[in-house]
Length: 121
Image (cartoon, rainbow, N blue to C red; front, side):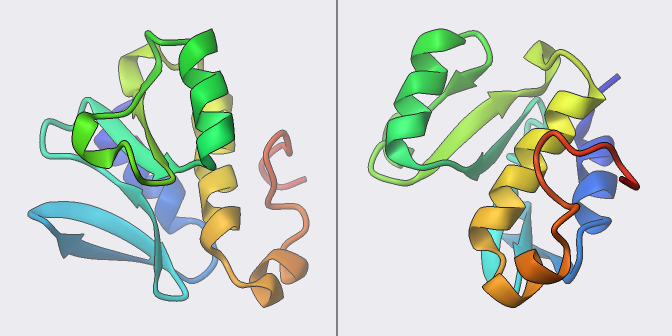
């Protein structure tokens, strides 16, 4: 079962990730840039997502992706954990968000850390 603790374990396995509480919820950062939050109900996560891609995701899978009104102007999307297909989909979403926040030196040092890659590949 995909839950907040599994999200936390995967996120913390990414290079230079730190967990920091902000807005009364856990946030995860790489090189000081936030790439993941776990809202207090722990049934969803928020990740970085360019707005154009976000709109496409929401249109294609509204049961999985959405944006609360207060985040409409941001480049973030919410993901319902119960709607995820499997662990690979979760990992791909987290890796994509991490790569958007990570500095080039880290993404270049970890080319295997990308969506679609098998863990340990």
